[in-house]
Every structure is written in C-alpha cells, then in structure tokens.
Amino acid sequence: MKFLILELNEYNYEILKSYSEKYNFKYIKKILNYHHTTTYTKDLYKGNNNQEGFLDPWSQWVSIHTLKSSKHHKIKNLGDVPKLKFKQFWEMKKKINFYIWGPMNASRNNSRNVKLFFPDPWVFSEKAFPNNFNKILNPIKKVIKNRGSDNLLQKTKAFFKIISVINEYISFYTVIGSVINSLIDYIKYKKNYVFFCHWEYLCFKVLLKIIKNKENFISIYFINSLAHVQHHYWENKKYNKEIKYCLKYIDKMIEDIYKNKDYKVILVNALSQKNSEKKQLCLYEQIDHSKFLNKLGINFLKVEKLMTNDAYIFLKNKYEVLKCKKVLDNVKFKNKKIFHVEIISKNKIFYKTNFIKKVLPNDVIILGNNKIKFMDYFYFITIRRGIHTQNGDILSEIKLFPKRIENHKFFKYVK
Image 1 (cartoon, rainbow, N blue to C red):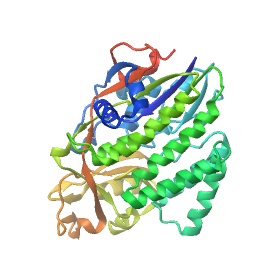
Image 2: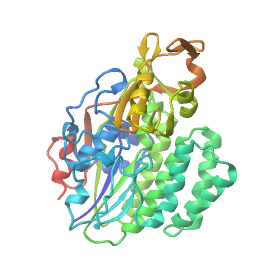
Image 3: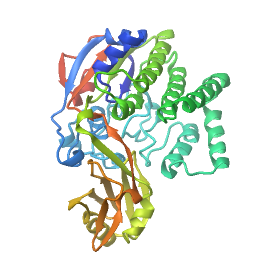
Image 4: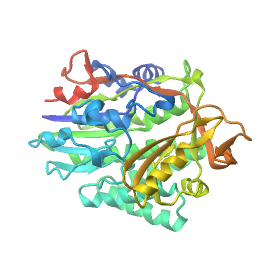
C-alpha cells in the first residue's frame, strides 16, 4: 500500500475545472480525470454565522480522520483535539507507516508508526515529530500568537532557524529562490496569500523528499491556501488573479508528484464552498483581544488567538470563567449579542465574533451602561465570498470509492 492523500481543504470542483481549462493547468487536469466521488454530511449551518453547528473544516476533518460523524466525535472548534475520545486513522492502522504534514485539528498521539507529523500550527497543544521539525513549527506558532508583532531581530532569527531545517531536504538555492519570488509577488499584489502559496509549496517539496523510495505508507498533505482565496476573493462567474495564483502553485505540486511518482494519489476536500457574494457577509476581527478584554474588566491569564475572529481565553478558576461568559454574553450591537461563547473547561473559554452585517464608522457596542465605537476594537477583514456546503469531492487515481458517500466514511475505503 502506497498512497499520497492531498487534503485540499474546501476546494470547489467547478473552480478546479474551469480554471484549469482557461489557464491550462495540465497537472490539475490529470487529477480531474481521476475517478470522481461526491461526499456529503448531514451537518447544517445553525444560527448566525454557523456558531451552533459543525459545518466547519476543523470539525469535518476530524470526522474524516476518525471515521465518526460530528454528532459522535463532538469536536467543534479549532484546537479542541485534546478532548477527542476516538482514535484517528493512523492510530488504527498500526502496520502502515504514515508521513503526515499539516492535518487540520489532528494529533499524532505518540503513534510509533507515524514517522513524520507536522501538525496544524493553529493547534497550539501539538508538537512536531521528529523533534527537529519543531524548529520550524515553534517560530510559526509564535508568529501566529503574536500576530507578527515580533521585532526584526526576532523575525530574522526565526527565519534562519526555519531555513536551516528545510535546507536539509531541499537545496538552499530552491529555498532562497522561493523567498525572493514571494517577496517580489507580495510587492506586486500586496496580499498575504502569496506567502501561503509559497510556504505550502516548499513544505510539500520537503514531504516528497522524505517519502521518496519509502515502502508501505500513507502520506497526507494538507493544503489550505485555496480555501482562503475562495473565502476572500471568489467572484461569481469571473476569473480572478488570486485563485489563478493559488492554483498555479497547486499545479506545480502535482507536477512534482509526477516527476517521481511510485504511489497512488487521492485528492479530497472534506467539504466544499459555494459562492456567497450576494449575501454580503462581513467578517470582522478583534484588533487586540487583550486590550478589548481589559476594557470589559475581564480578569484573564492569557489569550490564544485562533485563525481569524476567534480565540481561547484562559482564566484562574471556574468563578472567573462564569463571570467572563456573563460579561461577553452581554456585549451587544443593535440589541443583539455579538459573540458566540462556550465554556471549554473550568479555566478556559472559547469565543468568536458572531456578527456578519455591515458596520458604519460611528456605530457603537453596548457594554452594560457604557458605549464604545465598534471600529475602535474591531476591523473589517473582507466580504466572505465563499461559504461552506454539506457536499464535497474525492478524486482518486484508482477506483476505491462508490459514487457517493458520507464524508466521515472516506478512510473506510482506503485499503
């Protein structure tokens, strides 16, 4: 058994098809000629901005990895993996070696057959294996937590630590060439997706080097850049440079696969997106969680910022947790709560901005008897142009799957 599974998060099948035709992405075209299976989940959007449901990738990928639906595994938020009570596929298949890079909301759990595990950097509880890869992971986690606020010296040290590890697997000239090209493209486009695409491509080259000539393995590589550009830039019935740029690097990844391929390839998305441009769904993010929580008078120990508009708040005890939840539940905008708040444990709360309507510059938040300007503490990120759907897709080089399956049954057929 030798498989490379590309977990191309939330890809829209029609985007792959139309863009590969228009811009002749010939290696994506190869994948599109694979056996096509559609997937589905019974999970739905519930409430404003899906706060009460499980139709998010950090839940759906857990379904795939555990072969359990969300109603069974109950993992709902990014970073909740320590609460997972079920084994993941690589823990079940102990006679197969696994090489895994970037799986969303997943854990190695000291599985001896997992020879490489580079976790989702947003899951702060997880470490990389072998230990050397923590020289890459730890600086990335630090940047995420600090939102890039480190000084130039700290950033430079982190950069060279990362480069030193990557350089053990791919040439220095390849790495520096990618860094230079990403900087040139960033100057041209002034968008962070440029760095995402180059980073995913470099990491993929490292993984390909590691699995080359290995026997009896399953390798998993998670790609998130396309989901990001679909959410932010997808214009219905139009082609745009952001999606084209991202797909160019995915095409390069698949080209590299075909240069030395001695394994079968599967592409899966867990769930897809559909265009939501007309809904004008606004996405807002806290400018500074600590500053905002201090303004509310919340006595917290620390805050762990998650992917966009969500975070974990750590508090001293259960009393402070209940007090924090009560305060956050009473923050209102136009008589509506703006946060979804969950108690995770006796000293931990998850909260997420739960407001998706347009806010004007002078609009205010009500904090009990006080009022503050919404835009003093939040900033507008984007109009969300792609939203999650119940359906997904599998493209498999060999015929493994029926025409339609529930997404959590994916690994049932990988034998």
